[in-house]
Image (cartoon, rainbow, N blue to C red):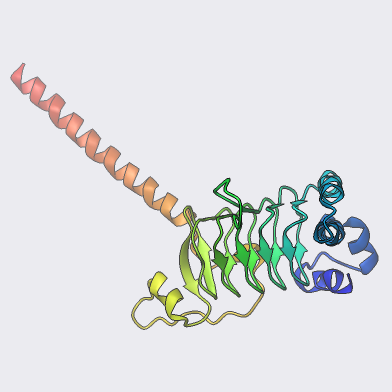
Length: 236
């Protein structure tokens, strides 16, 4: 409990004192209730665990299945809309923001939800769907949809999620990101709220490229239309 509270002061500059954190942070309430519910689940008391899990969801807006395994110093900031499935496994020092889903893509029994390594930050609205591993130290950008394994130290953005940065030089990560000639993989160690820093390219750049392309096509269409009208005038 002390670790779950203390870690917040390292990751949220709005936290002022322990009393405020204990009384006003829904993420703290959710994880403390989950630890109790997970203990009940492990003792075979499945209905009480599910019932109190629902109570926790009503109180906090955060839904964590009592079967999910959550590591130490877990922090959910803001929290509304967070969903963590039954077979999800979350490591130590993980941070989630509002609207995150650790979900599945199958109704089959067995492992259906992701395994999240230590020191992972998952930005607001991100969806991680499937029984794969999100590597230690990785960052998932806001609103990303991740459908396959993430290597250690990677930063993933977009729909579907793609690796855009490597925090270390692991071969798997470097194979997935295009590193320009003379450019080295970033060696970042700072905490990045919402999974990415201000220099990380997200979906905004592709949208701007699409707008420019649409403008160019409109100019070409207008030129064709004018040429057609001029031809009709001469023929008439």
